[in-house]
Length: 127
View 1 (spheres, rainbow, N blue to C red):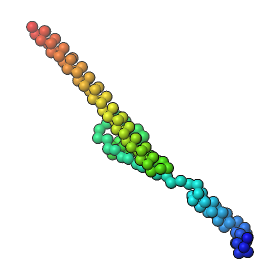
View 2 (cartoon, rainbow, N blue to C red; view 1 turned 180 degrees about the vertical axis):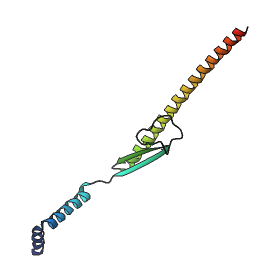
View 3 (cartoon, rainbow, N blue to C red; view 1 turned 120 degrees about the vertical axis):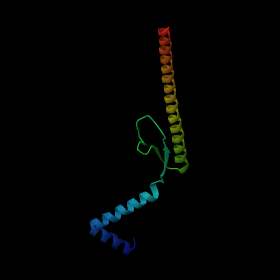
View 4 (cartoon, one colour; view 1 turned 135 degrees about the horizontal axis):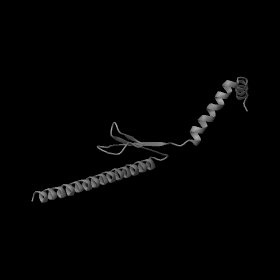
C-alpha cells in the first residue's frame, strides 16, 4: 500500500465521525452502482363519467377519475401491466354499467306491469 494512502486511512481512523461518513458513502455508492436496478413507474388516469358505486382504492370521486399505478424493473413489463389494468378496469366498469342498465329495465318493466294491472282494474271497476 502506498504511503499516502496509509496516511489518509490513519487520518480517517483518528476522526471516527468523518471515517464513518466516508465508509458509509462508499458502501452506499457501491450499492447504487452494483446492486440496485432501475425501476420504472407508470400511471394511467381514466375519467369516470358517472357511477353509482362508492369510491374504492384509486377512485377520486371528486374529480371522477380512476388512477392506476404500476411499477416494474423493465419498461416493457410496466407498460404491459398498465395496459392490462386499463383493460380490466374498462371491462369491470362496463360490466357494472350493464348490470345497472338491466336492473333499471327490470324495474321499469315491473312498474309498467303494475300500472297496466291498475288500469285494467280501474276499467273493470268502471264497467
